[in-house]
Image 1: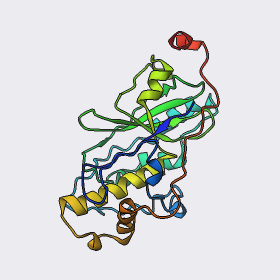
Image 2: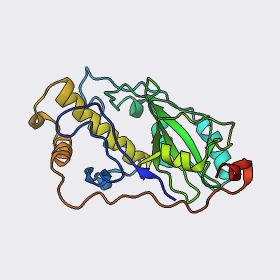
Image 3: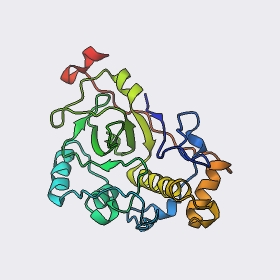
Image 4: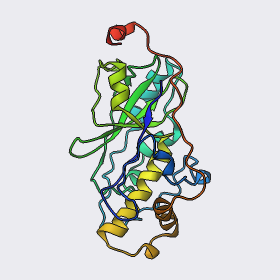
Length: 247
């Protein structure tokens, strides 16, 4: 078992912005500058979309809240990624991300146990303002922490699994990025491009060269496809919490 892939970050626009990618087309997405994705977010330029653009309101998490989550995760040999902690504790970083669909940071204090594998959890960190979409950090039992998205808001008691059949869960949740910083970078650059090209009606040639290169790749993918796949789940959930009845 593994998640299916998906991506979609903006409203409709030129140059392929707004296209929704699925498991078959995900590989057409532009590769990201891996050398910059080191957990510092130094690439995140404030107000890159312009002063009149909509930026997501910050809601930094107190360090005590992050520590409490890590203490609970430590019982399962897991921890929040350092990049996630740095970003979610910083109002400056959070306020630097534009969103043409007016998404919001949502710092859930609650870990939801995965319904499909033991010692794995979901942590919600972003939502669509109209409740059309939710984004989660998926803390896998293998130590990986991809970002997944869903139209569903998953809730449960602290550290308890969602009461949903595993097949239904896999049909509803999509793997969006291999880690949190990859997700933020792609979301950021596509929204910067959307505000420049759609909202401000600027010429592509006037955009930041990094943004222009990304959009050009969207229009005419070049080079090798983005060969990025979610890993299979190493440990399926057993009979605890009544999940065996849901199979």
